Length: 255
Length: 255
Image 1 (cartoon, rainbow over the protein chains, first blue to last red):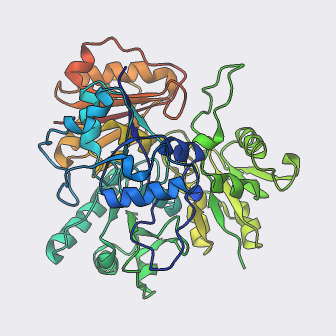
Image 2: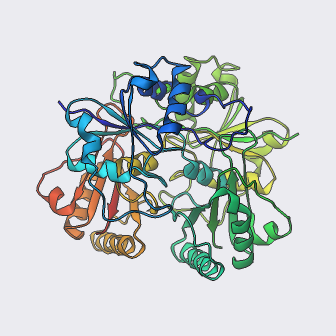
């Protein structure tokens, strides 16, 4: 009997906590059942071992781990280049050895659901190729929370990851996404490294049509998090500065 | 001080429970903080009042509601045509009157996050237009769980809703999605009414290229739920019958 690959959601508060501020309560974003499942796992594959140990300490404070943290088997995924899918896939089967030997493995990323705008998809693909059971657990996704909070079209939407940083390529890409949104009647979602949030907002306001609706969600599930949706003409009338250390999701829908 | 529009996630078990079967534990898919927030809300706007009352009974069994169920203010959204965005939007501001008067309102759909592949987006848009705070709460989304469990590209993906039912239009649309997936290197996700799950699977296997990867997730978060990913050639070698009463998510990625 093989073990399963269990996809464990993480919180969305990575890197947003200043020294001395209290960690948000895990129970605000993760189901109790997920916390209990995480506490029982001995084998982990993760984006970052340090972040994973911090997560497991928070779990342990609510539901005691089955073994001391140092006794857990925590391995890191190979790092992909930021912001795009890696092809061809490296051989990840050694990471799945505990499951083929019969033990469940937890897969966790630094924030949200593993494999969504995040490393992990290739390990899941390798698990399917081996015939292992893949079990995704419910938790927060900044993309879906931002989409729900936007009021933009949730019947058809696309997440496109990061846009180019260079000004000309960026403007071209943003226009392309606006055209796609118009042609397909599809909300287009993107993300940016937090310290470039304000630069991306300025580019969006420069490039997009005044009637295009733009939604920004900043720090969702965190204290002080917010979502705002207006058309580009309305956004231009405000001088909005986005925080440089809080993740944001940008969504646009062309009129 | 205005009230907020709070987006409350629902479970994914709607309509999947046979008579006599036990309801899954709410704590397996909803954070304790979300259950507590739901228990404190007096005003609700929902997709279906009966489904919402059933949800609130499950909440009440864990955290007592602030008032008896009959005393809560539960109103239904106007019904949109299934499977596509409604334009132009009806005037939904009367539904938001409790918030403009200072009380929080919960928005809930029959399954998952309101406004995602679901009614609710227009109410959220109306809330933004009134300057109300919109607060999305973390919970399960069948789309994102299916994407995470697929092992397909989670750095770029699109959800396109339902495909046409008529055979020629359906085949054309599936080919179009496969082409989009190839051109944009983008996973394409779709859903179907459960009793047509097997028919959609057959159409996908007829139409798609043998090398295209296809992932099906059925009844995620439910007992017996599963995810399977293989290329079309491999799927064709199995005679898969999908359950006719359990929601499924279909995802494809062209090679």
